[in-house]
Amino acid sequence: MSADKPIKVLSAELANQIAAGEVVERPASVVKELVENSLDAGATEITVEIEQGGQKRILIRDNGRGIEKAQLTLALSRHATSKIENINDLESITSMGFRGEALASISSVSRLTLTSKPNNQTEAWQAQAEGKQMDVKVTPAAHPNGTSIEVLDLFFNTPARRKFLKTGKTEFQHIEQLIKRLSLTRPDVKFVLTHNQKRCFNYLKTKHFSQRIEQVCGKKFLEQCVPVKYDFETIHLVGFASKIGVGLPTRDNQYIFVNGRMMKDKLIAHALRQAYEDTLPGQSFPAYVLFLTLPPNQLDVNVHPAKHEVRFHQSRQIHDLVYKAITQSIGMSDMSHDEPAHDYILPLQNKNSPTNEPQENMVYDEHQTSSSQSKPNAYLGYHSTTANPSARSVKATNDFYASTNNTPISSSRIDNAIAQSLIPKKSTNTENTGIETSESINTKQSLNHNALLCKPFIIFNSTNLDRTSSVCILHLQALATEFVRTRVLESTQSQPLLMPVSSAYKERNASVLKEANIFETLKGIQFEVVHSHQKLILKQVPSGIRQLPWASIFAKIDFVDMLAGQTDFSANRYQALFESIANAWISVQDINNSTIDAWLNVISQEALSELLKKQSVGIDINEIYADRTLN
Image (cartoon, rainbow, N blue to C red; front, side):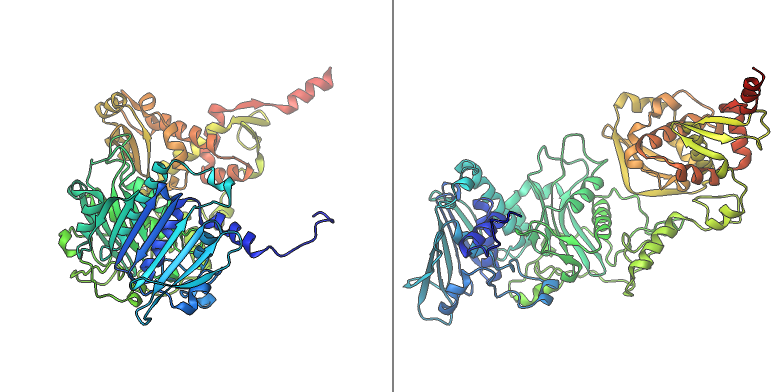
C-alpha cells in the first residue's frame, strides 16, 4: 500500500458505479432486474418496450402493487429493499430480487425515471435520477395503478462500458431470449415485447403450462418431448424433455429453472448431458423445459450478484435426481425398482413414480398468493392426483443418494459412509471386492518393506523370494496389471458407475466387437459396455475396481486391438484388457510408494513371487561387489 495514498471512503457515485459493473452487464441485465421486480410486485401484465437494443431506451410497465410516494426516493437508494429484513431471511428467499442494488446501480449509469401509483393512492408520483449526481427529484404524474420504469441512454456516463456493447440487433436478441425465459416461469402473466415500436410477441395469460410452452417454443417442441414428473421427499422436478433420438443442432430450447429462477447451472446441465449420452446422434442437443423446486433453505441464491447461479447444499443428490428423472421419463433408465443383488448403491426411490400425465394436468392457479411461493411447486401451481406411497430406505452415502427418513446426518457420518462404501466388509467366501481393512493388512505377510518405487520401475529385495539375486527390478505396469487382474477376478458382482462414461467409437470398429461377441463376453467379468450413436458407453464395472478414474481412462482402452478375433475368453485371455486398464490408469494418476503398498496388500505373496520370476530382472549385488573385491 502506498504511503502517499491514505484510505478513504468511496463516494456514493463511485460505489454505485462499481456495483453497476456487477449487476448491469448489458441492456438485458437491466430488463432482467426490472421485470423480476414487477413479478415480485404481483403484476399480471408486463410490457417491455425497447429502442435500439436497449441502448437508447428501455421501458418496463406493469400493473403491480406500486410504490408509495414516501418510498420513491428510498427505492433508488443503494441496499434498499422490502423483500428481506434480517440475515435469517437470506436462508429462505422466495422473491426474485432481494439484494436492493438494482435500481441504484441502474440509475448510476443511465437517466432513470420511476413512475408509480399504488392502489391506495389517489395520484401517481414520479422520481427521476441521473447518473452523475444521482439526486432524486419527485414530481406528480399521471399513471394507472402499477409502476413504469424508463431507462434512457444506458452507460452514457461510462463510455468504457458502452464500447463493449454489441449492435442493437444482438443486444435485443439477448433481451428477447430473456423475456422468453421469464415468461415460461409465469404462465399467469401477460408479457408484451416491442422493439423500435414494432411488436415482437404477445404472450397472453394461460392456465395451462403446456400452452405457454407452445407460445414460447412452438407446437413442434411439445410433439417432440415427453412430460417429466419426479418427486422425492421435498424435491420436485417437472417439465418436458426431448424424446429418445430427437435432437436439435443448437441449444436454443434448453431452459432450466430452480424455484422459479432461470439458471445456468453446470451441475444440472451435466446430469442432462449424461442422461442423453447414448440417445442422441453426434453434434445434436436435447431440448427441455425443466422446473426444479426444493425448500429455500436447501440452496443458496446469493452466490452471484446478478443471481445467475445457485449453490445446492446437497449438490450430488440433485445431480442424481435429475439424471434418474430424465432417464426414466424418456424410457432409457435400466434401473429397476427392485433392489439389486448387491448393496453398494441403490437408486433413488421416489415417492411418486414418474408418469407421463397429459399436458392438460399441468394447470396454473391464478388465485395463488405470493406467500404460497415458499411451498415446493407452489409458484407453478401444479396439481397432481398421484398418491404418495411411503418412500423406501436408501442404503447409500447421504451426500449423493438421499435418505428417505428425516433424521439429520452429520458431516462425520457422511464421511464415514463414503469411506465404508469404498472399503467393503471382509467376507468369509472367496470374494474380495474392495480394499482390505487395516486389520487384514497387518495379519497378511506382504513385501511392502522390501519394495521401493523408482519410476517407471519398482525395486524389490528378493532374498526371500527364492531368487539367487538379491535385487529384482519390475516395471510399474506389470504390478499395476497384476493388481487389476486380482481385483477383477475376485469380484463376483458388477457395480454401476455413478454416471456412465463414454468415448467416440467408429461404427466399423464397433462392428468388429459385435461380431466377436465382445460385449456379451465382457459381462463374464462384470463389465457392461454398449455401443450407441458412434460411442462406446461404459455403464458397469467389477466392484473391486469401481474406484478407478474411469472418466479419464476409458477412452484409452482399445478393445479392438485386445479382444477382436479371440474366442477363448478364459482368465488368461483377458490379460490384454488388464494391461490396457493398468496402462491407462498409471498414465493419469500420480503413483507413489503408498500406492505400491496398497497394491501389494491386495496381491497374494504367491502371485507376486510368480510375477517377479516371470517379468522382473534380477541383479545379484553381492556378486558385483565380490568381483570388485577380487579385482
